[in-house]
Length: 434
Image 1 (spheres, rainbow, N blue to C red):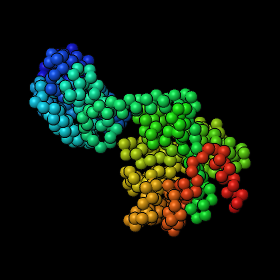
Image 2 (cartoon, rainbow, N blue to C red):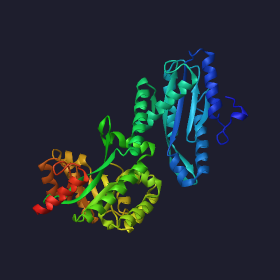
Image 3 (cartoon, rainbow, N blue to C red):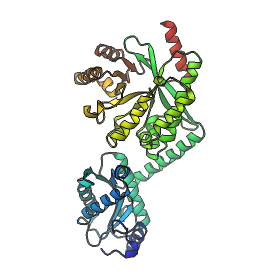
Image 4 (tube, rainbow, N blue to C red):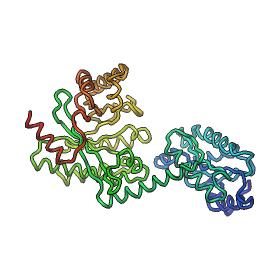
């Protein structure tokens, strides 16, 4: 494969994207769209973390090292380009059959799965690959590249597949995702988002002791859109950062309003996403909101998940300690479902652990799950952490949790998420009964 000097990427020596795309189109047009060829778009994962920690030079060094793994896999007539900062694209012309493109994708995924050494640190990288094959998937260069990119998007979203071959349904799924993103942006502009509050109760007697702020979206045409439908889109697009700031501000102002109305002081939890931590300005935002609202900091609790921690543990710890030093409570949500490690758990400035709803659901019929919850409670008590169980739906689950020593819980057995006015009425009514 010869590379013209004007088409060379300065770092890797590969084709740049534009001349690569032009050459792909030329080769396919020369065969009237009937060339049996594969187009692979390869995303190298964890490169953005490498960039944040070590800078652009280390990222470029890593991509150059990975090129040396790619070249032996590709044939002399194959074209390789630096497709984007963390991506390669490979054109495999003149295949005997379409399956060879998938064989190549598998070989590339395996070769990228080994560690690389950057500044004395071993970095584990992996690849996600989108594959499109002509003429079955496209008969022109731009369409072939576009379809490979669509397959890559699906591979990245799948979480498990190293590579995926383009299918027609992927295009419609991508369109649905883009339509949802557009609708979500409109929802932010047009004030379609609201916050509901689900009560937390003391497990021993069921009295309200707190609440969790939960985002809700009512679309003017589609009605209520479930969070598990739109939150992933918000995460992928980065919209979760402004949305998360809005929810945080809304919840803190609501606490202030309830205090002014004479409602007993009650702690409200707000979920914080991985993107908000990566944003890096969360502690400063909390400082501003606490100063504006003048609420006691302990009435705010931030719920984080374990996915925040593994990539940049020290950075996450620094932000969490800053937040905890202000008196804001911190809870680890969905405990036991992610990367739980006692080695870092003891370093976190937490106030409580939340037992995932799946454990609560399963423990009623599965003795081993009940033992897991029991172990979580024992560990939390040893570390002076409160335990909150979520997703409680039956009296039997409530009884088990009470006997295991869980302090607080939430779920449909006690109350569903509700608007702020209904939540206040729920708390007042419980207080009157008490």
